[in-house]
Length: 147
Image 1 (cartoon, rainbow, N blue to C red):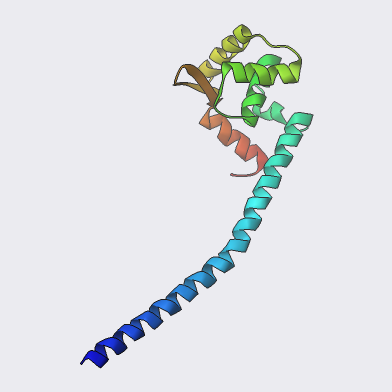
Image 2 (tube, one colour):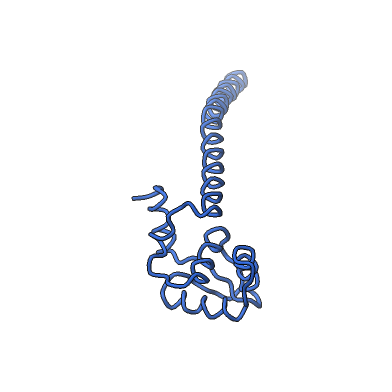
């Protein structure tokens, strides 16, 4: 009887070992395509960012109803970096335009929030802004991510 129990345990250990090998094989087969997708996504995002900085992506389609250049620059800054506070947004706009006022940026953010282009929320002591989900969806469709 003890021999039968030992033999049953050995069989179970062999079965578990076989299943572990199967899982290892599956992970190995999946790992390469996942790494390729990560690399592709990283390259694509870098390319989109470069096109944005060079001004060759058609933001006009996305920002067609935004009339002033400062607001457009704010939206472009938030395309590059989500969850930014007023100081960070001002700095990004300043890099693009050469100058920017925190007061003007704050006013434009309020207008953009009223238009539904950005969403603001409090994070610790500062207001933090990001593009609205609707604008992100429009941008994704423009880039061909979703229909």
